[in-house]
Amino acid sequence: MSGDGQVMETTVPVAAEFDSFYRKEFPAMVALAASVGAGTAIAEDVAQEAMVKAHRNWAKISSYDNPGAWVRRVTINLATSTARRRATEVKAKLRLRRRARPPMAAASPIAEPIWAAVAQLPRQQRAAIALYYLEDRPVAEIAEILECAPATAKVHLHRARTHLAEVLRLDGSIA
Image (cartoon, rainbow, N blue to C red):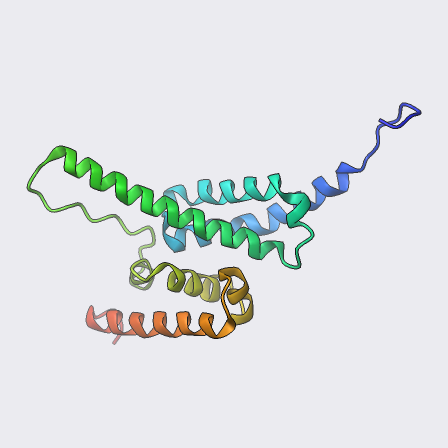
């Protein structure tokens, strides 16, 4: 409140700015989280957690040249951590059962053979492929999001494409 009893509206533009950012970026963060390894079942939770972190730090993040790069980096990290944690939980449950069965293969979050193959790539390559093909991001922006040089982002894309071509040819997905 100001000295004359009126409510000051300094937070409304900031809140509106974040709301706009959220509406614009959230669907892309869900797709990115699912593609990087969180799986479609929890991709929304991962994206929401990244957005909560962005909201908590919005005063700082909103001053960045590209706040979207920051939230993408957080989403990739959270999706990777979530996938790693889920894999650890599955391994622990299997050890507890002490059965001589082979471990259950995790269901592919994306049905297409290409995205199933992408799920097998190393983290940075998965992220580069998802950012390039799902979000149509230029290499320079991918480099910014992944916090690497543009040449390194190109290497991630090249290696991912090469690996995918080999894998998809071997399993008959590509003629």
